[in-house]
Length: 245
Image (cartoon, rainbow, N blue to C red; front, side, top):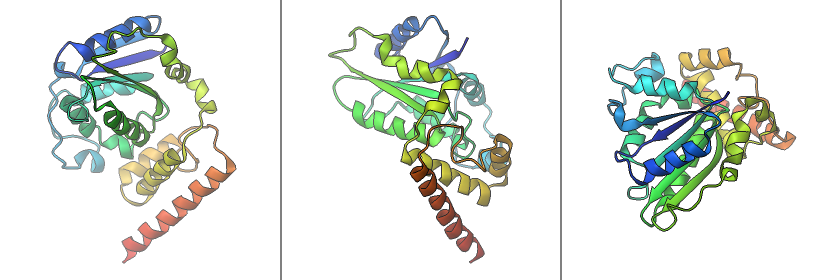
């Protein structure tokens, strides 16, 4: 049975929490684990880049515990209240502590679904950021459920999560069609791995990403493959030239 991790990033157990709990009940036939970020002691990232260069974090707290729970899940649902058109501080701190995932994409190929709650406005901006985050992580963006005070109690329908459940089975990733933006992000990360950080290169070689057009076998048109490869060659050239100079 596939494992779903639901993450509540609100400090309160009100709108976001209750909506996520309803989703948990709706997906009850799967193995679902529910966590509240506030229950973990997670300190803000200091920007030391130790995780990028050495693979460890000098901060002693619960971040690695929660991050390991996320990486062990087959699919992730993240819920956040919207504050000033953005995600909660709790979630942003967690994302910052996972900055190495941009270089070493531990969630590549896993479906991610986002849930936002707000009084009236701001969901669009928050969801846009979360969509971009899913691209940086190499995940499959499986949709978002924005709710306001006017439709918070609206009935949940399982078909809302159909894409998420479909890609929860990793056998279905072969049917996925990554966007051109996703391909460019992949090749950008590959260039960084090959040219900048030795730890990244070791990871990418171990995963077998170096010689692939994307993290995993999926549907990529010949045109996208060519343009992605061309972008990789051009970016590699410019970085190599700057390194020499």
